[in-house]
Image (tube, rainbow over the protein chains, first blue to last red):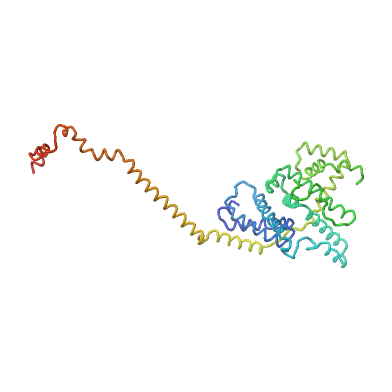
Length: 203
Length: 168
């Protein structure tokens, strides 16, 4: 990042290549739409480039990157919720596309081998469980799971206190458990029943 | 999960403790406490396994795989952003610059006018002293004469001529 700060184009290319998949993965699961995630990731990289002079040497780049990503995704989700009638893209993400349950029923009627079907079902159940978390819980889970961030780094990225992150992740784990246990017990794919308060007031 | 689990299940504190344990966020003493309880309390141990199982299920989530094309498009967007930030100022910005120049010119003119008026109102004492210096240098001689007519007569008589003047 220090090389980028000095205006080295090759360094920025390297940075994009190094972080693009990680960033899109987080954004995809956060906004639930791959195309939107890619658009937002590009927006994030443009912002990173524009703000390169404000980067503090010594700061962890990934924390800085995901702080920007968190802002960008939150804004996108906010404007998406203000315009519910507009579907950003028909190609929803997730292992079974836009409507996991419907698509799963279609696939079940085919000749799919049982093991493969189980895997598809599990992916679908996990996807539904994750999407049923609040935006903040989802972000904290994704940063912890995919980026292996500590509570301190998640707190910095999400601009929360460490005890708030601890509580957020604990509730997120409980909600995931509540959503997935019915699947493991009876094959039901359900969204998480709120443990505590689901939503942005869950802190 | 049987009813005997209920006291545990309802304890937010225990879930939070187990969650922090799984995240590796407990200090040595906290970790030791959790591990001791895990060894002796099967319900507590089951709670941990349930949390762990759902967390591990997140590994099923797909991870993005993008290639050079995405990077290339991104870099093009960045290049456009860099160009627009380095481009000459827009007409609006040029207008703003003109406005600032006009303000700066007005301030400078007002400053100069202030200096002029100030000098008129409060004359420089040193300047008037310099102007009167020739008079002060010969003040003693001037005091010895009674009037200007007498001085003119002395001058006509050649009393004030220097040695050089006389020689020429």
